[in-house]
Image 1 (tube, one colour):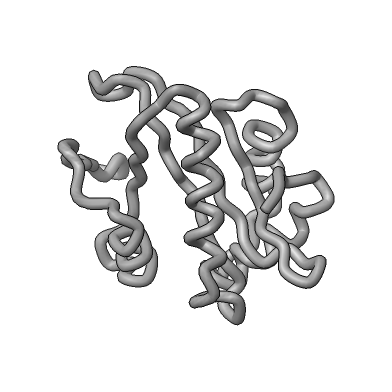
Image 2 (cartoon, one colour):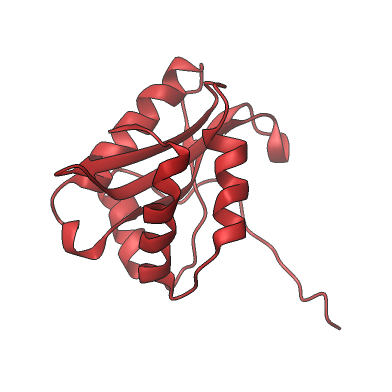
Length: 143
């Protein structure tokens, strides 16, 4: 487990594209610029290596006072190359992310995901995450 480097972006993009079916080069370069390029401890972009190859990534940050809540940690991206799943890689990445967020002074972790993403929902529940106090709302802007 280590901090992401610019040279890791090709693998991160590849892992994400394998899982989502969409290659998002510009998005991932923007994410790296915001979360990986600096040295702000409240923003973390970590990768997991196995046999010298990046096999997973996790990204999180401390967000302050959103929705009237005190500062807390948010994890907004986590994924592992499919052939490396079920080996504890994601659990270890989340643990390291949480250590860094605790060091930044927060004591709660949140995330948001699609209710039909059973794989990631099962993972987060296995890590002890449960439904929180907020209700996501949305509307279409095309009408």
